[in-house]
Length: 309
Image (tube, rainbow, N blue to C red; front, side):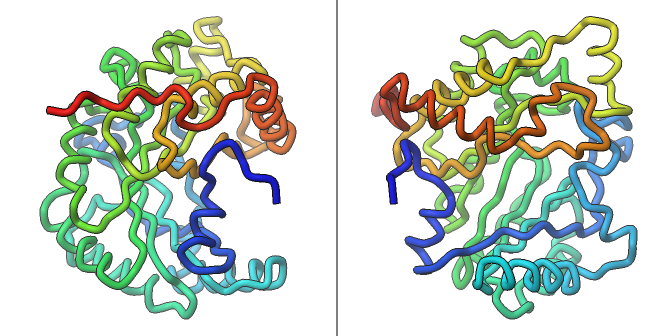
């Protein structure tokens, strides 16, 4: 098999478990402080009302059944039964530790589940939650996925994120050295950000030495503040090649040890406003790999290690 120019998630899983492992989405029915009035009621300007969730919790589907349904499909297609339960929708540490423990325990009790990935915000973790996850990490693979989006406070304010970059840095410091892996979510193409702004975020993330990164395209979804901004001419979406080039430039600035968990997102076709090309995921991934080859670059090529204290 041809080696990719970056450290991908599938290869990482195979190195740990000796076989293919799949992440399956879990909807735990949790909320978000940026929607329930604690910080705001509108959420981030690009976020849809489902918070990237499946709606399974609203339909009364238990965590156990959600995972089992995905397991059945994955087993038929990929002949594997090893699963990472990915708590994705909204903020999955935004509840008392006792409630979170019940949710996480239910997921880990399903046969074949070898770990958890917890999608959350850097302002929604405390010592009780981190102690809980640290305990799980003694016997399971545990990832905490912090939504950062940008390292620029002006951008975080513009998108109504509700926290600053220092909050993300503090969460990383509090989480590390506990056996918990950290993944940062970053969005490319945010309003007002230049190419240099995006690359500066890459350098800032690289300097923190975290274990993983997920890259997302900013696409416009119906019913969001982003749609209003886009339709009044206040926002231009990245073109497909432009996005692919930013992805390659971002990754070449990261340490070669960082696991690249995602190269682009998956918009819901019925909700998407723009850009239309974002639905062509395979075409975009092929273009990213082609640009890596055309520019003779790879993950870590331009990584600049932070100076020792």
